[in-house]
Image 1 (tube, one colour):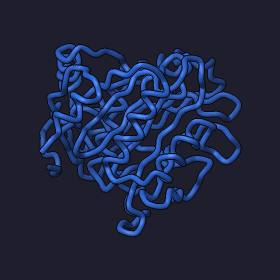
Image 2 (cartoon, helix red, strand yellow):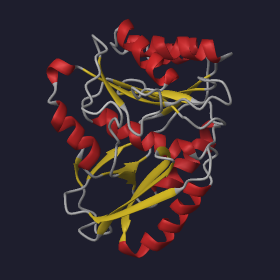
Image 3 (cartoon, one colour):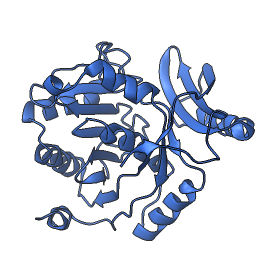
Image 4 (cartoon, helix red, strand yellow):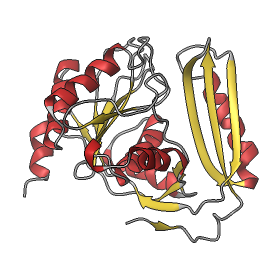
Length: 280
């Protein structure tokens, strides 16, 4: 359930802090926070450290943007976290594709998403800064700029909820600092109209990817790519005939959303056990 947020600690003095790092025009790192004025300087320093230590290469440009949030803030519960235990890249990709198919994504749309991310989703063969938007039936790309894609913005955890996430991750036996941002993005993507999301990182040392959907939550697959591979990206799957694409993009990029509650997740398991959990 999504409602306007009315808490006293987040109001018109909340700010969107965004960071983007690049080298020779290529995006290599990005992050953002929604936070009160008094936390801006501390978090700005934290994002600068992240920009300089992301495992891809030293940036030659780092840009920060700080904006006061004047729109109403929505809040939501996070997607539950699951992890599928797989044997290798081929096994991870096969099961990730099966999960997308179970969520109503056509085989051609699934293939195009995997192919595009694997080779570099931009028409010039590079990684995109943002995500592709694909029609669930045809696989047609719907984002207006295939070089940039769609960047999900203005999403964060309510203060205190990050500790809840850390405790939940410890409870279910997983770790990784990248989960926080990915979970936040996936939650916002799925709370609108997307049927599913496919994602894996362009960081050569991080090989875990995920599928997100409303029914199954945030589902991680270890080794969805080989270590050393610098290709990565995101694909959002939507029913192109049933949505206003401009309104959807505006929601993803502009509407502020705070995650106020962490939904309980699950201990890593094998594929069969995962499917059994959702049997009717």
